[in-house]
Image 1: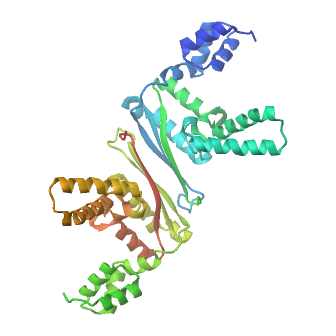
Image 2: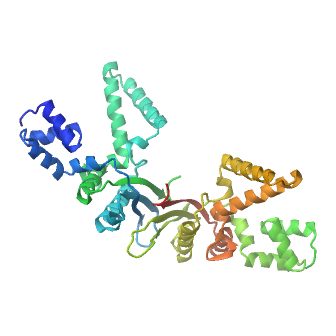
Image 3: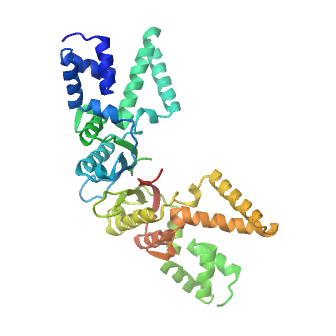
Length: 204
Length: 204
């Protein structure tokens, strides 16, 4: 693959609003052709999604999913989720509601604790960091690599516990965030997960 | 109605485990006959319910309710509720699940903020009390009645905001707590609402 200049990446970022690595990969794939790279980004749903990400979402849908352990048993796990969009036109559409149902299933299957990384409380991150640090020190890792090890583990913690960062259960190569970005691109509206609740009878 | 002695009320409380006012009313209704009064309490589902109220509830069901404003609109209000009982035998039964559904409807209809009065945070009660006090003083109420007025208003606040204390929407003469007590008596197990969530798209 052709190496691409920083200048080209900067330009594509401006046009598409997409992240630096996404732009770099698209340009490499396009052999340095910026128009072709932009098309690649659009096809991946990244360009439009990023452009729309700041827009306000006052409409939406509340969706629920109840999980039965077996047919003769009442639901023992339940999920409630609120997904927002910009207009009631999109909120009424089948695609949007299907996405909300899919996200409810995701929450049921993978038990995220927060919607996005911004929602993780600082004290939780500090606590996690301390645990990883203590473990790395105990394992006798050299000081200069501990920071890197710890950051990697914090990143893994976020990918496991934040809905948007999780691998999409039906297709683990994509994140839930990518699934949402595709719908933003397709429905041409910003889409956000506002909140969810997950109840499990077995939780103490 | 016959006046009943404190001694009789105390005895009936011991036998039934029911509250003082319930015992007093039952004894008045029964003309002072303690056996008859106990039967009245049982019929009302109060005696057995009170006796079972301390027992642990590790089984149960998670139920959901989604509310549509109109047929062509997706749900804009959603409720998730966890209702617990003692055994999976009761959890599997139709009566119990119907109760859980009814409670989900109640939450959708009346927007409680907490399950019971014990769940209201102290700072919320202090804040409410301050507002009522300031209002009563501003209205020029005499100091000796302000405490009584304020306590009455705090009690009303609790009855409006706590699920268990609310009037049951389908039959406002009874509280939700009484509806649950009837099921405790009927199903012969303690039943508790562990938690609920209510999402409304319109909430800011």
